[in-house]
Each structure stands twice: as structure tokens, then as C-alpha cells.
Amino acid sequence: MLAIEQYTRRLLKDFYPIIAANRPPVDPAPEGGERDRYVRGAGGLVTGLSGLAQATGAVWVASIRDGFEELGVGGGGEPMMVATGDGSRYQVSWVNPPRLAYDLYYNTIANPLFWFVQHYLWNLAEAPILDDSTHRAWDEGYRRVNQLFGQHVIREARRGRKRPLLLSQDYHLYLVPRIVRRELADAVIQHFIHIPWPTPQYWKVLPRYMRDEIMDGLLACDIVGMQTSSDVRNFLLTCEENMGLPVDFRLQTAFYRGRTVWVRRYPISIDVREFERVAASPAVERAEREILRWRPEQLIFRVDRMDLSKNIVRGFFAYERLLQAHPEWRGRVVFWAMLQKTRQTVPEYREYARQVIQVARVINSRFGSQAWQPIRLELREDINRAVAGYKQFDVLLVNPIYDGMNLVAKEGVTVNRRGGALVLSENAGTHEELGEWALTINPFDVDSTAQALHQALLMDPVERHARAEKMREVVQQNDVARWISAQLQDIRDLIEPMAARQPELAQESF
Ligand code: F6P
Image (cartoon, rainbow, N blue to C red):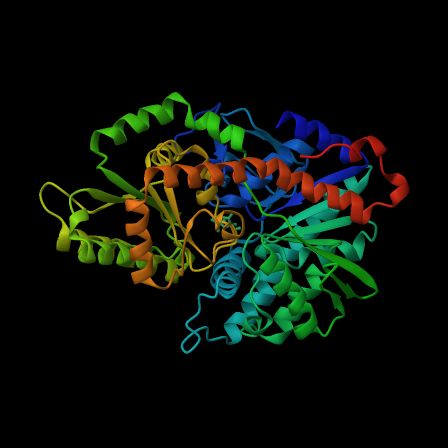
């Protein structure tokens, strides 16, 4: 990160950068002592942004989530320096919404409603049913927490002596850009959306006032950042069809309230060098030795939060079909699923976790024997063990229904040592970059997913290695440093007046 850090600092020397995201960059350490109370937070958003935060020295405005109060973290004060055991340091400014407001924002609007709309998860014949409680959650939860975040950002921006640069994130904070723009007309605002942007028609599941306010919020930005070209197109179509705005698909701009808003694709990625360092660490090597004691001839692997969008149950059904159609694999292959419970405050997630465990049990009792269990289900969060699994897989299954990017695919192909194959959903954002060398599946079709698994297991090793190498190269070239520099370069090129440019920076690229 060193080169990108220097580059970023120079590029942003006239700005006061602020990141706003629901999640902080750190989580409380599971068995933390006085000195290592925090670990790097989970999920793709933190993976991408922690590099950006460290490179820019930005203040990170985030919610206080469960587990933080015990660490004495309080909202509303000065930013506080937080360090993790691996030496990363972040300046965090905590927003502390009232419990009920946070619950309505996170557990009623952001996760069940927006997450479901943006991943096309509803069975529309039955759900959602929107009623007064939804409208109340919008007013007293989502709007209120966004308001708190907005005020926090404004206060933070006024502390800095330079022009504020707000990098707000994701579906939790759609209203923040407008709240900030109202007070700070000259701020540069970029909002990045980590999850898919669906078609204008699908947005119409939401009541008009809600979707209009979301668009009004986002269109207060200078730049709206997206993961894929299809997200960019859908966003522009939404501006045109749902808002009646003039848009330019070639320049990727929308015009709103007399301003031009740029809509750009920045596929998020991983810190390749850092990830390779972790893969070579003694802790990962220890985990690998343990895996080598039980790994079969062929190992199918997946790592996921138990999120409905990850399509874990259909992945098991596909594997069941494989064992049915090709009994020759029984006893020779294991499907290792390393899963983490997530959002257990949302009923749909609790039910999904139950279903995943149940289906794995049924398949194991149908095909398993004393000597062999077809599915190895591990419910745990253990980065070292996950990376050891990445090194050891023969086939990595990434079959989401829809996914903004999916960093598991990028992490897996970066450190795998066996020329492993990637079976990849055409609806994962990462398919735009890796699809050519992966085995592409329709995530709903369990029979063709079974065939893809079979094909991957049988693939000629020369071809498998060649594909794996190509995928590794793509991720290496487009790692997180490029994600950061592409955004900052656009901020400079699109927003800053030509005269303010520094010619020497134009020579550099990442
Ligand atoms: O962008 C989606 C995301 O915010 C990712 O960072 C992460 O995979 C997940 O959602 C985390 O969700 P939560 O913060 O609700 O646990």
C-alpha cells in the first residue's frame, strides 16, 4: 500500500476526506485483551475501504454496533484513534443512534427491505407487505439515522480546514449526500454502492416517496460509484424511467436540479500483496496442515455469510444431484462449506440459517457412511482457516443469486495452490472480470450447476491451471489499489477545475 498511500496523499492534499459507512473498520476482538481490543471488521466494504482510509488518513464516521459499548466507545465526540493487532490504525468518529431508531433502520428498512430489493430476493406474490409500520420505520428509523450521520459528517467537515470530500457508502446511507449538500454546497461528494442496482421496474416494489427520496439523496453527489457496468446502466435507466431525468448513457451522466452527476463503475477488489502475506503466515500454514489430514482426493469449497443472496441451499441441492448422477464421486469428494451466521436479528436470516443446516444434514444422512460425510459444514468465522481452504480447494463454488461483487472469488483465485477451478454465478459482479475463465452457471439451475461441478472436477489439469493463472493475473492487475486510485482520479478529473491539476500526477497510474 505504500506507493498508493503517497499517491493518494498528494492527490488529496487540498481535501479533508471523510468516509461514512454504517460499519466501522473494526470489530471487537473475540478474545481481546487490553492491547488488542479490535480486529479488522468483516465483509467486503471494510476490506476495500480500510485501504482507502489508511491511504487517505480519512476520518471514518460509523455506527456503534453491538459489542462496542462495553469497550467504552461513545458517540458524538472527537474522532478516536483505533488500532488493530495487525498494526492498522483508523480515526473513527462514532454515531450513536437511539436503539429503537437503529433497529428500525437496520432491521426493518436497510436489511430486509433494501437488501432484498437490490438482490431481487422477494417472492413478489407473497412479499413484501408494506404497511404503516414500514412508513414508520422509514420516518423514525432510516431517515432519522441518516439525519444523524449527515449532521455528524457536517460537524466533522467543519472541523477540517480544507474542502470536504465525503465518501459515503452503501444502502444504509442513501439520504446522507443530500443532507450534507444542503449545508456544504462546495463539498465533493461521492457515494459508492457495494450491492447490485436493480432495474427501474423492480425499484417499484418500494413506495414512490421512498424511492424518490433515495434518488434525491444520491443525486446530490458529484459521482455515484457502482460495481459493474450493468449497475451503472440500471442506475441511469432508473434516473430516466422513474425520475424522468435527462441522462447521457455514453458519458454516463444524469442531470438533476441543474447539476451533472457522474455514474461510474469501480469494481472493488482485495489487497493482493497483503492477502498473499496472510496466506504465507504460520497461522494459515498450521490450519492447512490440519486440512491435509482429512482432505479427500477432490475438495469443493465455499465460504459465505449465511445470507439468502448467497444461494447456499441451491448449492447443496446441486451437489446432491452430482452425487446422484455420478456415484463415482462418492467417497472421493467432500464439499466443505464454511459459513458464518449473519443478521440474526432479521427473521428471514434466522429461518435461512435453519434451512441451510437442515439441508446439509439430509444430504449427509442420505449419502454419507461411517467413513465418509459428503458435506463438511463448519459454522465459524476464522480468516486463517478460510485462507487455508482457499489454498487447498480443487473447486470453489460461488453461486449467488445476485451479488454486488463477491470477494470470495477474488481471494480464492489469488492464493489457491492447486490450479483450482471457479464455478461462478453469472449474476455475481465479479463475473464481469473473471467470467471468461470460470465455469459460468445460472445460479437457479441446480442441474447445470451439478454439471459444472462435474466438469470442474474432471477438467484436464493443464487447462485448469491455465484458467486459474489467468484469473489470478486479472485480480493482481485490478487489486484494491486500483479501486482506490480510479475513484480518486475521477474525483480529480471530473470535479476539480483543470487549472488545479498537478501535471506530475497525470504521469502516474495504479
Ligand atoms: O456491501 C455489502 C456489505 O455491507 C458488505 O460489506 C458485507 O459483505 C455485508 O454487507 C455486511 O453486512 P452487515 O454490516 O450487515 O453485517
